[in-house]
Length: 481
Image (cartoon, rainbow, N blue to C red; front, side, top):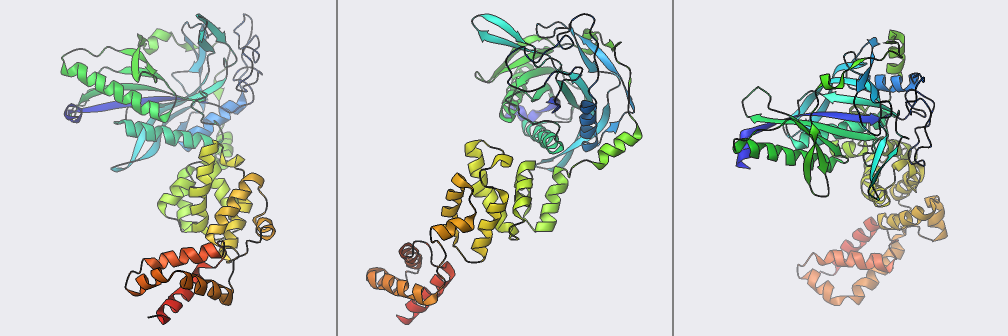
């Protein structure tokens, strides 16, 4: 720890986001995940001789969306290039990407840190095709699945502005939030639709020169990004402290062993022998098209969070949780068609609903209770038709049926007792049946009051109005003094 305080990490992230297009970047094959190996393929994505690529316009639109959302300059002219390298699952022997003239440049993403807000600069966002997938764990052979070959990606390249594992994780979370809000990527790291490579070097604090950098690949969760970066930062510090040299290389993160091991020497751009793709014209983007895409952008996370604070008078924490995922924010606002109790709805979504969604691993767009019915449930509590305790029972029933809460309350006779004369009878019976606790209360042990409330609610099967129960109990106990 003492050594770590003398050094500063310098981190740049390269994030690949698989675009939610129906077809691949340069052909009409499906991008659907989970198909049988080598079924979503054609001569173009297999790289057969004589085939020609045709650019997917939707992929270009998605890249522009991300560029606008991250404050980038959208270049009116960009060039596709061939990135040459050999790998078994790269059938052409090169990848069509962008290099010197990408579609988006010079943006930034804002993150929250311990010391306040920081801007992480973006060097570029470019479009490229994905490679296939090598499968190494089947009987001692390596098998190749080309279904993913040619799937459209954007690569989001940051400047080396990140200085801690926590900042890297927050930056990555912000990017995931943006691509899902924009509807251009599902953000699923486990399935590989959002992937992250990290370039890391260290230097002593106060120095400006960059150290020798290494690259870590194969990080498929936020937690693994933090673990991998922490491992590599500590490894480089130990090397420097022992007067040894950090070697520029590419490392593969092994989550099971919690270590990064050498994969190959780190390539530089000249190793890939980039040259303009001869089968694709330069990409020309009109100002009108950019304006059209800009006008159709959805409300972005930070703006939506601020609106939740101002419009619904929610605490910043609540607004942050509710807008962390677009599906949660959408669900919350849909529920407001049935209730105007903003804070109560926030509490229910953040506690009961979010707990179930996490347990069942479902997105809020597939939540078993409709937003409208959850809002109705809260309205029943507000109107004192049912108590908060009964509402939780009704919620459990709704999880299995998504029935209208009003129907459940009627069918099970759960309507709250608000008749003071009925509640008075129950209170008198509870006090009569618990003389010891009454004596304790009268002798100054006021905590016993909660016991009486609990007993009354138990006797009424949770249907007695808690406010009326409290008022009658206080009156009856005061008369016994």
